[in-house]
Length: 153
Image (cartoon, rainbow, N blue to C red):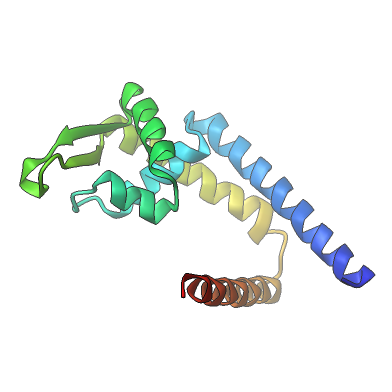
């Protein structure tokens, strides 16, 4: 790796870490949700009218089953989600749903998250910068998807 490439990579990593920390702190301050809580609630919110089983959540979040299980136990104890046996979905099937408390917390969190993104990212970058950021991000995602497919073969 050339020096200029190394510097660009270092800047990218530093930006990701700082942005992640700032967005996480702002979200937690206003909603009392962790990033993991928010991630689970975001998936459940998108799937509001669909029965959501833990393995579907794990796949969408790209989490191990054990991590998801621990997260769901914590969230259920805080009454953000509920789990119930759902025999109509199959033997030993469990269904996960958002509670009213979880829905309210998610609404608060998403409003704060969106405001933080507007403040930190959108107001800092020009429209051209944002288009470039999107183009670079999509290019990297396509490259990662190609590598993922190749590694599965």
